[in-house]
Picture 1: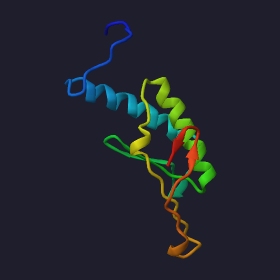
Picture 2 (picture 1 turned 60 degrees about the horizontal axis):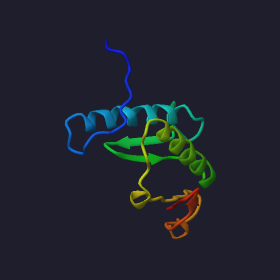
Picture 3 (picture 1 turned 90 degrees about the vertical axis):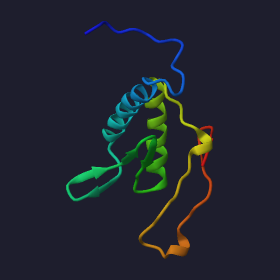
Picture 4 (picture 1 turned 180 degrees about the vertical axis):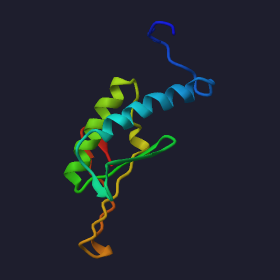
Length: 115
């Protein structure tokens, strides 16, 4: 195995290595988020993140928990050279205890991001 090296120029989108390297970095972010004590319990598993391709869903018991998860994810992603695209970021709060009319879909702000 070769020694580590730093890439200062990045990769062009469409380069055969770009998707592989992106997935490797994103996997590290997801693994780190899974270690944060939060989310919901399904069976014996504690679940706070779902991911498919480049889409990530953060799951929390309340808005405060999701905000904390987002800040944590943003900090971890930054360490791996990834940035969260504010234009593609959405949120939805669903509550079981209230009727569907009470579910909120709208905007809230975390740091410089508006959802």
